[in-house]
Image (cartoon, rainbow, N blue to C red; front, top):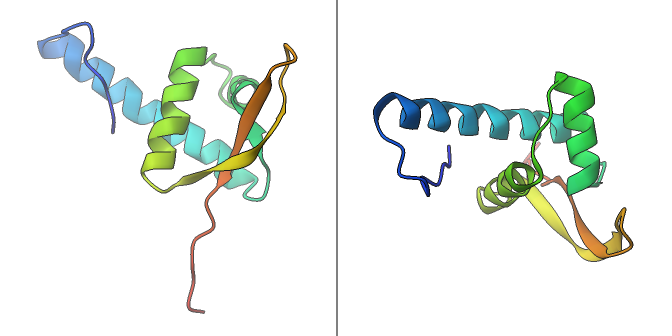
Length: 102
């Protein structure tokens, strides 16, 4: 769970924000697990999130989840960029392959 308390929440509000951050990261990871070889940009992941969970994820929250899951070794950020929806170059992510002895 990664929650950045930049707004100085306390007590119940802080606990609720931490819970939502954990749930959101788990949902983002689930999206990548259902298609383990698929690469997704942040915008593509947001669309898949909406389709899968019938709930929107904000751009900043989506980016934060991608970054957190990458730092945790769950996702892998592509070195190559692709053209995003507004013509800018953007990165994509995929589920990080896990080494297996068998």
